[in-house]
Image 1 (spheres, rainbow, N blue to C red):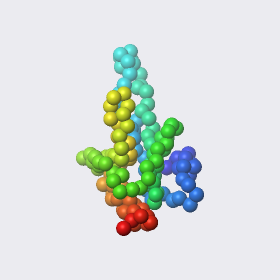
Image 2 (spheres, one colour; image 1 turned 60 degrees about the vertical axis):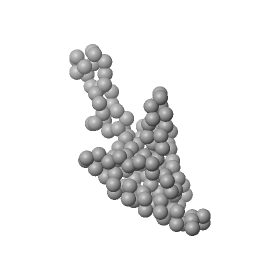
Image 3 (cartoon, rainbow, N blue to C red; image 1 turned 30 degrees about the horizontal axis):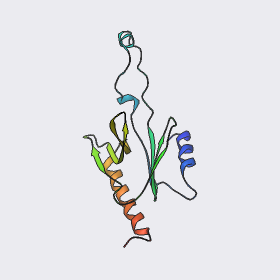
Image 4 (tube, rainbow, N blue to C red; image 1 turned 135 degrees about the horizontal axis):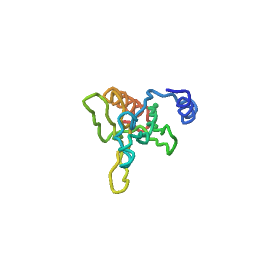
Length: 140
């Protein structure tokens, strides 16, 4: 993580809260589809850069999604049933989906999107959810 990203994460954490895992995901500029108008393609001008990604953190109580270029941060509290789907790609990267938003009539997944080693992060997240559940005064 860059110093700016470390600062962004520190600002989002609550007093005494420590991340169990941090990582970056989202659309990487290198894998973004090439866009641009006809003139841009003809004269081989570089396409606009894709978003720099999202900084993610899992803490003992919640998951944070902090867009690197600013914008609305999101949080999800650790609870049973949080994980709706896990989509793993052949290279081991993938998505851990918590919910869906509708954007222009299309369902867009929310959660840990485009992260490396998705199976490892899924296991860590499941352990954190179990620990949060066991620590809850309402657990049986």
